[in-house]
Image 1 (spheres, helix red, strand yellow):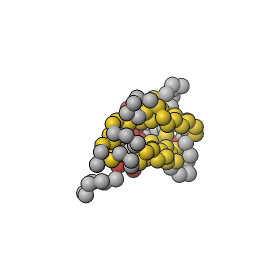
Image 2 (cartoon, rainbow, N blue to C red; image 1 turned 60 degrees about the vertical axis):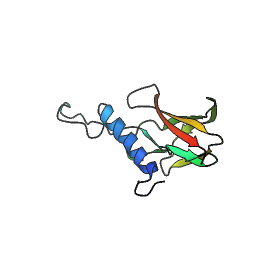
Image 3 (cartoon, helix red, strand yellow; image 1 turned 90 degrees about the horizontal axis):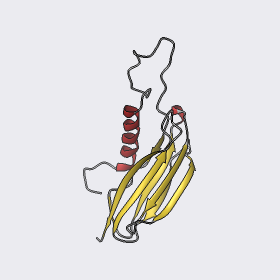
Length: 141
């Protein structure tokens, strides 16, 4: 990590939360004056995800993870996949995100190239999955 730059783990989760809160109707922070009287707008219902490092050295690890905010309600289901430089999925997890703590996994970058991490979560008021993709580049150091 370069000096003077904040750690990306916590900031990415907050950025993903903010992205969903802005993009989805009825999310926290949305204007409520357009809602009919007596109707309460809901808070964002989502699983927070950990943004892995954007660049690492070969042989080092990067961290992926999930967490569910108890106050947000909604679905806690998630799916996560990591594909390596050979475009093959070598890591997959699915389940229910914990609400008491983050659940992290360390992924080792065994060879140089691009690692694609894809998180799938249920957006509010939807039965489908929404994908969030991020890339980690492993280089020889």
